[in-house]
View 1 (cartoon, rainbow, N blue to C red):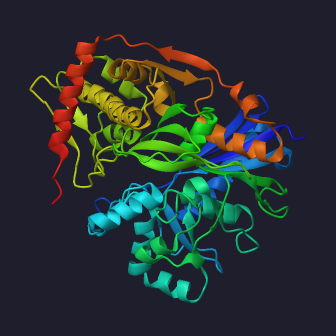
View 2: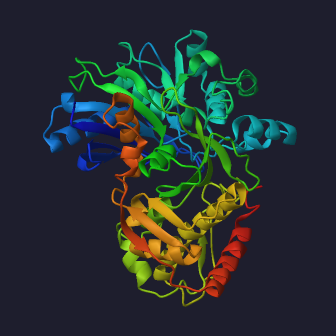
View 3: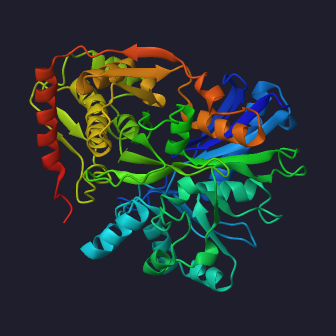
Length: 500
């Protein structure tokens, strides 16, 4: 048996390839950023060709860093930024437009034009609200606004999919036999898949004007879809054996296999999910009902999810737009230089508010400023904003599921920020636990691929690998938590109805 599993983690700001051994240890990794293309206010695009180039670069670099040959990989798993959508020409392999990113708001007016009755139909059929966040309106926009796309569709040569489909098609051979597939977790984020049948829904396709023939076939999250080509850039035939949307992958990486298991991932945005088992739980508190995973021929497992658009990217904003820090890591030191925010609140609603509000008319605000306010107060308010947004979706999750969280499992880049995690414990009033491997998104894709090829025998073996390396305990009292949260809710009110 091969000694390693590779995980290709294609995120919003960068792409990573991480190689794991049988004990779940990271053997080697490589990472490369790609361009953020901002053609207009509220528009966010990526160059899909550049993303594929980065995929190849990081895979080769990680293998070189590990000092192993590609043939030593037992399988490759793919995990990806969800909802971001690509349409390409199957004969040339070229994207027909930049990928439209999940954060993109260009279809806000289109989405707001849907009647309440249609919104109810969509939510029941898909588990999702009608919002620019999801793929369907992005596809409809490209078909309507890019003449070349309509022409290629008419010629029968168009392929469309989320980023996982684009990567899989290229990794399995592209114009030389590439397969056009996606998995249930990604398909459930498009507003086009029926959450009960796990199939593209003809009525939904008609509503958005999306031809079925351009979409990928929906498969499970853990099976052998194809192999890399021996004459390709890796020079070996390796099973491509898992696809999971990034947040679902993080749940698998956090071994959240039992009903009630939950995790929160801190990345560009924040995403909290709770396992609801084989039952679709309909949210009454602004959460999403979504597919968690399906392993092979097993039953589909569902989840409730709360999504926050801007968390880690708010720290990038402090660095890139305001220039008050030179690197993201500096925010902790700056925020720790003051004991409180001095009454400052920052709501980074740059792309509107996601869960539990779903208000595309909201925009970011910084409130409570006085002459005494400094960049340190704004930095601390930024970390608190991450934590307050997380509290709101966790509270909604508890209300919907009826399962009270006794602690939080966390992962993602910001969990390396000890101050932020302490603030999270203080604001939530529960312990926060960080696992041994915080790259749980990549870990989850590796686990799913390893299960498909027998690298790991079952999920119990995976559960035994999960270990806590750091835990934060609340240091504030209930009165302080309640007072701080009241201020946050007042700040939220100031963001609303800004875009008319």
